[in-house]
Image 1 (tube, rainbow, N blue to C red):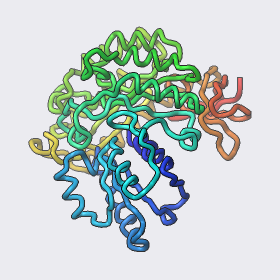
Image 2 (spheres, helix red, strand yellow; image 1 turned 120 degrees about the vertical axis):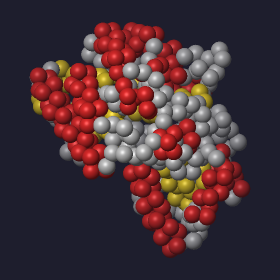
Image 3 (cartoon, rainbow, N blue to C red; image 1 turned 135 degrees about the vertical axis):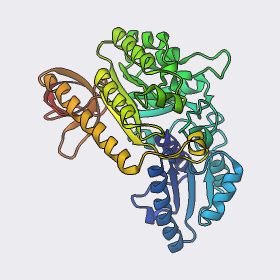
Length: 424
């Protein structure tokens, strides 16, 4: 979502006549987009801000804008940021570029009057932006109203807001006309698309319509919530050409007690049943999940439950995060952070090692198998890089395919996290 926001901000700046530069020190306008979903991400943003402060000191005329979850959507918090970061000229809430539009107009930049795609996003990216990538992220649901006890997103990005499907499809058509071949529809809980808009289509139909846009070869969506993956959604992925057989469904923990403390709204058994339904309908579906280790109350036994669940599920990827209390969240206010950081790190390392070992065994038989990938980039060595429909990253040696081509290849090497192939 932050990548999509940053690209749209860049598009707006380019429409005003600004051009990107290679180094921050050469810029007359600096925009820093931030994430605070975990403490590590916030610390990284604060460290970068210290560097930006020095750049501003060297050139006081340089405009500095701060965007994203560190800013949030509450005006009183933004007022406090002015005191913390007096060198910042402009504060932008997540996914809202209207303050940037006003700022540019007030300073005489030629920002077109029609730059408002809808209430939240500017129109499709200019050619100079979308031409940089074959894959484009398109937000369809902004914010979140689910309020898991550990999650800061509802407090920083606001409540759930679906974009009109007509605006989304118009953006996809514009992206396709500029060479984009893969669309990834985004939402904090993307499966809830349209529920807040009476009469609007739902995600399965939005996916089908997106896949029918001329020029679009592949469509993906993320992130799903186990409670909202419906039979209709599974059927749409199973039966629609161009919809990639890939589901990103965070489970977060393998213990019912921890899931209840997180207020996730499902049990381990219900999650396993959902994955069973997906795999029954789409046997070769790729599955990725998220795990938080060290959540308050996660004992060693409960962590072992998570390890056991991963053995049973055999996912294609796990994104692992150590729990960190986030301001305003229920868990930060009411639950003790009772797992020492050294133990959180031990659990993270153990889960990552188990994942590596499992994927090494799982992928070894794939060597020699045919695959299709969408070429995204060409490395300096000439290798082509892309992903299979089920999201496996593949490097192809000896191909002259161009970015955007669908390439048939044969795997020659299978590692835990990537593959090497030759043209078929």
